[in-house]
Image 1 (cartoon, rainbow, N blue to C red):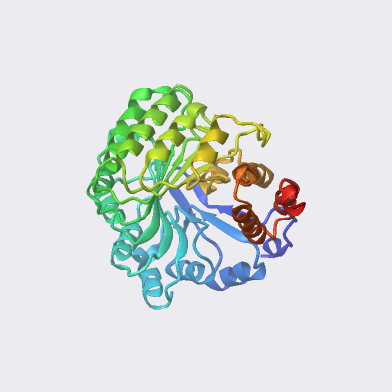
Image 2: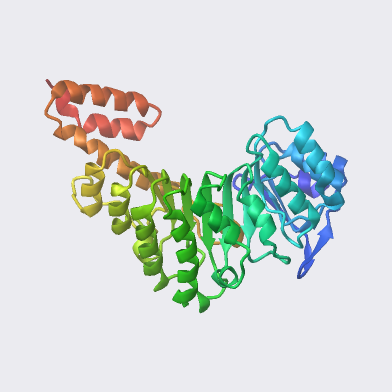
Length: 395
């Protein structure tokens, strides 16, 4: 235990423990419940990941008590998860836990917990994860339950070939189509783990036809869609994704937030064809991109296609974010905080450049005061607002 008690370095506050000892075989987690409690409580700022360990019933309860289970991946639970379920049902309060991905080896705990999620009166997990690369026993029945699970988000890590040759995701597709899909957010992460298969457009088109076809239904109730294509080495297939996404946006009426996590071809920021379709959508008002890698924002005084769109569609919010933990686990490049803030500042400055074009001085002054108050904690934005509106104070 002494090595785990060492102080955190300034940057690394995540401790990852890997328990796999062979394909489809996990090792037992060696810590007793009491040792786990000491480990988890010794550093309040440290995050732990437990991947592919066999957990005892008592260990699973201790992890649920002391963490949000966000770092628990592919860990079979003994006793079919019954003690963990008892804790979640009677002692968890109404606390929403993190991500739940307990599929490796397909122990009975997975189905028992998913069944409980369908009966829960509040979102028990922030997200449930289906990983098509790590399911050793496939059952569409469990996925039918997941479509009705009370979680905020359902994530599917898609291998297009497994998706194409299996009916395991058909209940999810049908639930999206008929409006019975319970999670308000769907995250789709595409990867084949094969550079050659990434270019097989037919396999991707089959998946997109089914999923986006379901989201095009007038009965679809999905509020948020997050697409991650960064893991796949997409080149020619990026255009296929773009067209299917545009076709879906023309028919869908429920989406409010769209996140595109890709730097591939036409899907990287600003993805103007997608933005033009988003502008016509009845509810979609928030679009999130990865910041363009290795590029600086254009000058504010410039008027390129995005800036003209952005200054015209004032009800739409363009945001930038880092990619999610799936990419972190695979060791892929992630956007730095500096890149995200740099591009987020750009869209802020570009939008508020419209203040200088207001003819009504009273309205302009009011909007400027509101903007200064709203962004008072950001000195750089306050400085920009003041310096670019000096004429207001000169009158």
